[in-house]
Length: 223
Image (cartoon, rainbow, N blue to C red; front, side, top):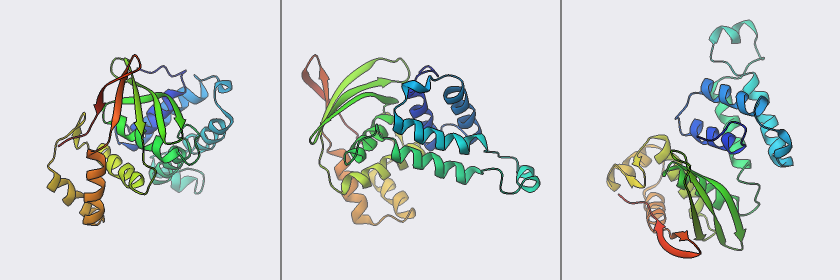
């Protein structure tokens, strides 16, 4: 378990909330215990301080009690507003990288399938290398990815977020058939060509496992 005094805890609860693994109330309590009570704010970058401070404003005024909105109109934020604020924070937070943020954002969603989070990342041109930490035992693993920067990566983020949200996976294995996944995404308004292109992209990734400087395998998603 990540310590609440570690800023990675904030990244973790954001992923957990947006994947519907915790409720809005649980997220706000965890955010308060970490951001307000646990973390030394000096450990946050200027960008992180700004983004988390803006999110804290919403968290501090979130309520799920209907009477609060009737008694104090305009004072509180509801579930939809909280989710919008958390999603905005996540989109702006991918370790503060510019054009590469979509690639890092993709990796966050990808490794979430493995119940892991990125603890360190470096970007050099179109190469990303870093270290992931598994949530259940805090073991670490190095990785390397030569990524193509094109529109497919944004679609792949949406696909992985959908898989995580609806718990369609068990680790790297998708529990439903390809045909079932296509049908579910079509119900969400995805076009079939976009779905097939995205699935093919995700299934043919080459995110390498690195041990002591050598490639020893690869992370992969499969049906």
